[in-house]
Image (cartoon, rainbow, N blue to C red; front, side):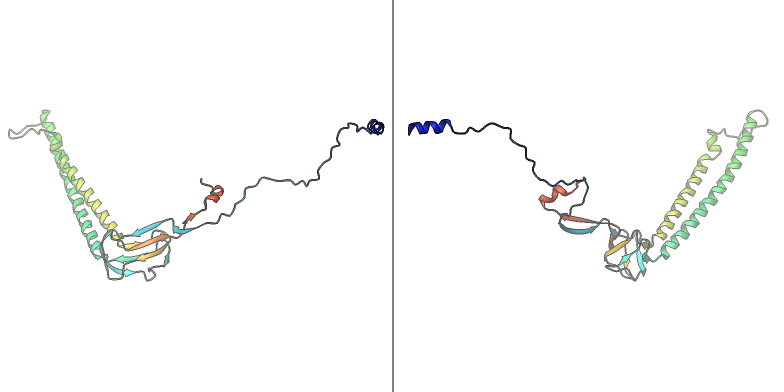
Amino acid sequence: GAGVALYLKKSAPVAGKAQPKKQARLVDVESFETQTRRLPVPAHGQVVAARHLSLSPEVSGRIVELNPAFETGARLRAGALVCRIDPRDYAIDVALKEATLQKAQAALEIEQGQQRIARTEWEMYQQTENGEGTVSKSSVVPSSPDLVLRKPELQQAQAEVENARAALEQARLNLERTEIRIPFDTLVVDESIEEGSYVSAQGEIASLAGTDRFWITATVPVEDLQWVDME
């Protein structure tokens, strides 16, 4: 038995060494391109107008005309008339300011005439001082040529004209402000005036919201913030 076992051991086949064969795996190949795409991110929020305005008159008075379309929920175009305040007091003020300006201009023309007379007298005085004439003993030597030529009086008359002109411009501006108009395309959120009601300057008469642009205040889940551009 020992001999048979030894024979089988020596006569057993021996495995030789060899390089393993390369075997390629079967795959599917596709080409890709980089693209910028918008990813939908679910969110919810509140839509608000980008522009809000509390409409207030700049002058006081009683409303004599009201746009019938001006009511809560109405949509109005820019420049549409809201209401008209009684303009009679402001028209009277314009007439008074025009009269004041004419009076100031007349006073300026009179003073300019006085200027010409004073300049003539001043030239005559200078000729007398140069020996070209006689000087009365009662003549008083002027302390300043500006006083003789009435320059302060001229400046005062000119200032009165400018002041009257500015007052007239303010009166005309107040008359224009008796018409209140919509400043931009808007939605009337709330209004509190009626024809015949009295309004005061800077008192709120309506709340407006612009219709040209809106903002959305949205709540986004934290895991979706990576897809939101924060710029």
